[in-house]
Length: 80
Image (tube, rainbow, N blue to C red; front, top):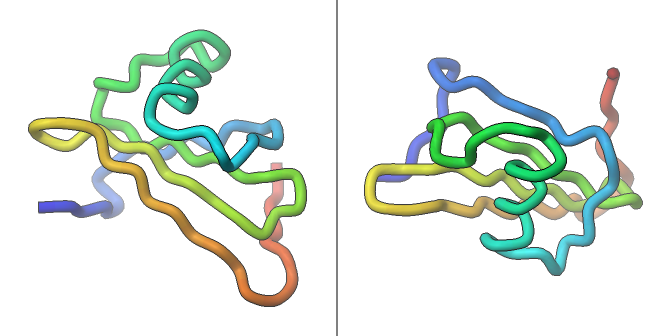
């Protein structure tokens, strides 16, 4: 069952990401640039330069899950 809740740790990658990247490309960012393990069970959040698309990468039992979100109007706001 796919599920995300407050029991997970969430990591926001602080640079824009090409939203054409899939499982392998985003896993590479987690491992090589963030220095974290994609198999940890944490949720990794990626946003594009226009801040109108977001992807979440998460390891569930049995494999990776990739959630995708697109804003119809405007942009997402983040505070770092």
